[in-house]
Image (cartoon, rainbow, N blue to C red; front, top):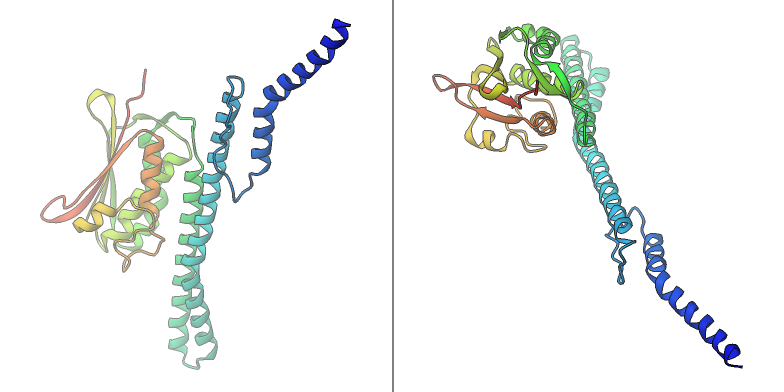
Length: 294
């Protein structure tokens, strides 16, 4: 008789204990089921347990990563829509004018403006895609790369643009210097720095690229131009995303230097800008790379 009474009581106690033990899991399941792309808040379990804490922390990390990616995606879409709306409207207007005009010289001017508009639109698209690619990079694999060779290749690719502006480019420093870099991101950094100098230095400017070894085995990359020195306001905001300090000269979306800054951060490098350089003229961009361990 005592056993018959004890067994139901034990069963009831076991059920109560099991329900209490699994309550955090049920609560976690309900909170995860409530999450969506528009609701990625942190998961907070009212009765946390030692076993569930690592899982909850990892889920919150995952939600944060998804939310950051979603924000980047929305910002990219908004920026693309904003940056492409005006150029496309201008292209359409110039095309209509070219089709309607009977003046051959006017038609040629319209066609030249159409070509310039296409080039600007292409540059904006390239910058937006590059920004998206750089922002998605985390924990990139850095391997020893020859900084001098990469600088030489970047210059060779941009020489036609410099010749078009009647500019001269020189490369100085050592013959070979190793830095720890990403084989895709590092050439983008160098190309953007040299491209920026070519676009903003002005016709007939001198552009000097130098790669040298400094104290403690660190490598210093500098890109110096002889153009008009940047204003202090422009220099202070140069690395902000979508900031265009010289909109009358540039044709991008104001992303070139912010992309350079992001890539430098990924490499643990320090980037800076000095202006003026000499006789109240010139601009110098410098990137200091950490030393490569033997």
